[in-house]
Length: 302
View 1 (cartoon, one colour):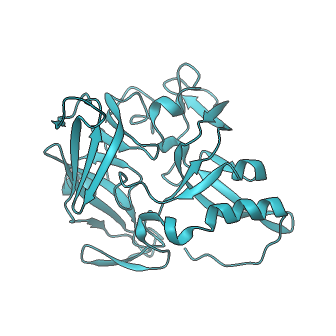
View 2: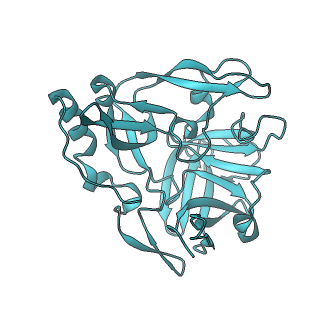
View 3: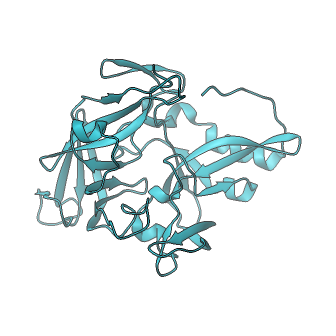
């Protein structure tokens, strides 16, 4: 998964947009790590080229994008709708380049299926769910236009996001993390735009959409304290389905939920001959129960 550097040429407007996005790389690098670094994941050495080094971008002005929504239960074609991203929204993305004619142009891919349910389904047609794609790295929107790129600024990974995680944590310990079966019980999702959602799997919907339905409970994260291995998240309101600790009677920080990183990452071996990479999952203790979250690949392991 190496990236070849190539010279490319484009207009002044695009240069300005790219400088605005990548000029602060040292201050906004994701999860405090750099690509091509070797880090310890448990007792394994892993390249950050294969871990989930998500990039994060904040909207400096409102922006409308086109998003595909797929039928939730029936069979049918996707419907394309306009989704408005409010100013200040933080989204996960990937700034890269794509070929346009004889040139490479800056391209921003956005993973909008990860943002909060109320925002992403604000424009959803009745009976439809945002198309999550076939995998965790499938983007819902790809932007190339100068005016759209200039609506984003690069920001550090939010403190509420677990390290190397896309924000989706599934109920279960080491056995579940190492299982080949897809999760189908409960999930906690921490969204780039700052919400915590508690989700009960819906087995009545189309494959791949079971954890994309309306959360059982959710709340906006109002404050984060991180002191490894603990990440304390504060809320103004309780969250249905989770036991939060009441720490104040008034204000925006009345409830607290602690995520404890157990620092016992689970590794599944890949198959080099078949071109299958091994995977890493981190274990967390939340509300007295263990959860796991996918944090990346190990490359091709034998």
